[in-house]
Length: 448
Ligand code: HSE
Image 1 (cartoon, rainbow, N blue to C red):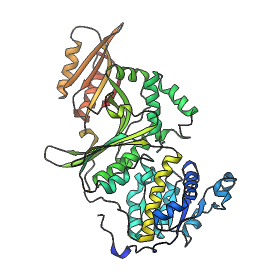
Image 2 (cartoon, rainbow, N blue to C red):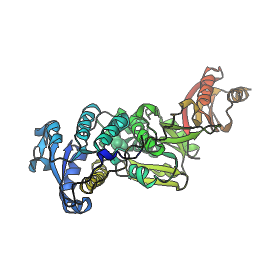
Image 3 (cartoon, helix red, strand yellow):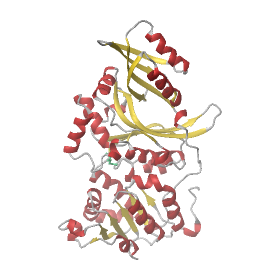
Image 4 (cartoon, protein in one colour):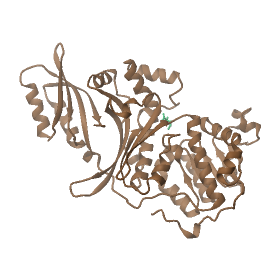
């Protein structure tokens, strides 16, 4: 499929000054801010969109729960999302519910009935982009999802539009605020994961089900969206290799610090080229050692930052608030204005672009580097024995540090770049060797 629009579904527009009817699905942290800002800034949005934006309703699962809120005061609440979507005077549906199955059904119903959709739902877009894009194309409407990746930080728009004239080679960065908050606190206080997690929970950073954040799935959904946009290839969350931060210990952070690194959960999307010139796409999320001098190392608290590397543009960095009600509402509102302009003046936003259709690289073929922390026997010949194992797998060593301990030696090895499969086979062979008492941790490196 290309970005070319189907002329039979060309949208001629309602005409300058026409009202755009908006349905909001969901009234949580984001939905409530979207409604407040839409009402507070209605005059400005009318100028920007070319016609007034009129909220027709706000669908929630339990109307009583929202008694006394702005949506209630304005008489907008309904528990019948399907009827709200199908109203003739609704042109645009804003989905800020979260989850996958129920929002998918509503978003598809909206698109199929000719309504443009704005969603903040990364899990939905990452899992069902093809189906959603096809429904939007068939109806000649827009599907916007700027808020799905890094909330307030404009990165979807730049990839879809501003960089459409360039060739992107890499998109990498911190795309999950909760895990960055936890890793940053571990780095600055020396506390262990469990204690920092409890503190993050107390401060309200952790979601009811924290696994999407700490196991890396939220970041993996965002990586899938970024890789799809950057490489004009359909990448789903299932295509993304994913490791979370739950195994990162205070000792890992300590060792990283002593070697001049910090640990970040990175999403890395790359265009890979093999020796024969064949291209493929890699998308992965894992804890990563980043040099303390790298700009990503100073992204602290719950902030996000994304680097984009493109052949002509060079390196671009996007930084800011990647979560929270207002920052997410900012991105949603930008999309609402964009989709509304198209409803008023005609035309469509760039749709899904998958013409490159590159294969997804086997994770074992991805080039990476390891930091290996192990306890080994402290006796003559151990180092020679272990370096033989690295050599046998074709792995070149960059640094080897040894710390004396009472009964053993702690060996901290940083490798040069090699295939993931070769590095992982090396670690398996090390773990099988009598001289290695324990492999304490294996963490990948990036940013040098
Ligand atoms: N839980 C997510 C985060 C919210 O921490 O970044 C935005 O996706």
